[in-house]
Image (cartoon, rainbow, N blue to C red; front, side):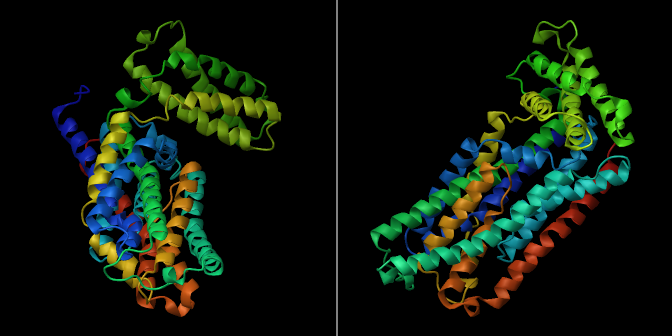
Length: 467
């Protein structure tokens, strides 16, 4: 299979199983985000709610696209993504998966709504920093992408908290049926209209959780496949690499307008590296008229050249001192975006693996976090209005993040929304201070702990594996 040696094939299978295990854990860790409100308001029976949520998580993964997945992949420095050493790839993905799973299982065991997104991203950052220790000239992390991701993870809970308070205020102002603001009856379902709203918001949170968190699993598996079997998964097999030649010509035309003598030393170095990559692509494509004429090894070289070209040219064109017109910059951006369609992809089989893992995980182990969401964040039982407003805000925030291709923490968005609904009812004193402290502590510790754990595991794996 893939022409791999037996022991490498076993390691590949182990990494894929571990990635599916991460999504499985993600499923039962985060299921409460969708089902807690419908369970605690008697809108759906627990087993119905969990199966319903699992189905929409599955659909979300399949239909969610790959924007977030590629955001996860490109958190790592480009140099680590174009390292063709199989054992380096195994060490990288093995370390980040194991670290994320350890943290997720630990927080789930103690019933803490911790973020799977934070755990995965922290693990990736830890691996990137550890990689830089072994390769001092390489960047530790794609910090621009990390900055976008970090801002999204920080802002979304704050918006979730604030918007839920506003929504609760509007409900109190305009809804005459005050029964929705009281504790649900232990055995009776809510009024039909609020029940339908709660089921709809549960569905939306489940779908957007699949489309956002599921994409993280897709990105994780693509890291595995690219790292261990780069020749087979370097480029989208459905596209003909020769079709990117027109875009390459436009990139060369734009770069050709720059005079190295007029640039700063740093920009001259970037321009030289850009021309190295365009020359590499020209050499590979020279004389080729059919995709069958491209050796498999050249596919990885094409991927490597595209990623390095994008990375270097992006820095170059971002400089205000580089004399390029807005038209030239737009031409470059459009051309490089077309070239990246060959590298930014995920086979349908990968999405199916993740969708099944997440969906099955959603149906198992959900009780611990559900109890925290429904009973322990505030000092009162969740009301119909609180459940509906919290999930509506959470669904909107997660959906917006997915639309912008940014990872979002479903756990933190909904937990903060629940907290906001509790504050809207009786003020800050209505929060359970001990549980809020525990959740906040898990939030603060997730990134540093997973970074240290993943970085340490990466250095350990690199030490014991062949170089």
